[in-house]
Length: 125
Image (cartoon, rainbow, N blue to C red; front, side, top):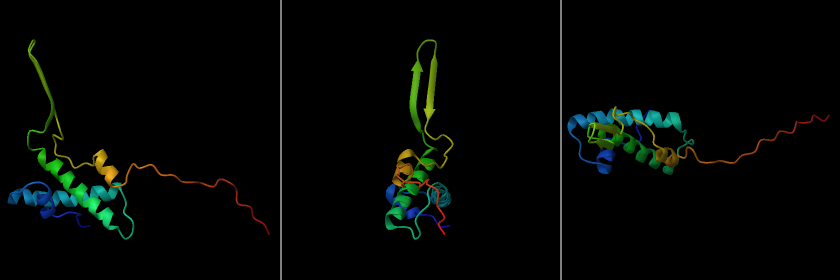
């Protein structure tokens, strides 16, 4: 199983990475490909559009996971008396996950129409 994006793809879409970050990014890109494939199947063979979407989603997943080491606070609340504070962190453990927009880009969660014929098959001799 090969990753859908390379470390160079990630750097082009995000920022320069140190040598240690590049090594981690390579592993995370491989992991992202496995998670994507487990969630959404591709056609056989995969179309150019499917592969492009998977490249974008792979990079987005890895950016989220690697950004977790930073501040990553999505909301903060303070109260002066009696001295209360709280913070909510965005992905504090650095998990790889597919967001709702990632799933939509991959074609997961779209409504589909179909038909099931429930009439019995008659056997005529």
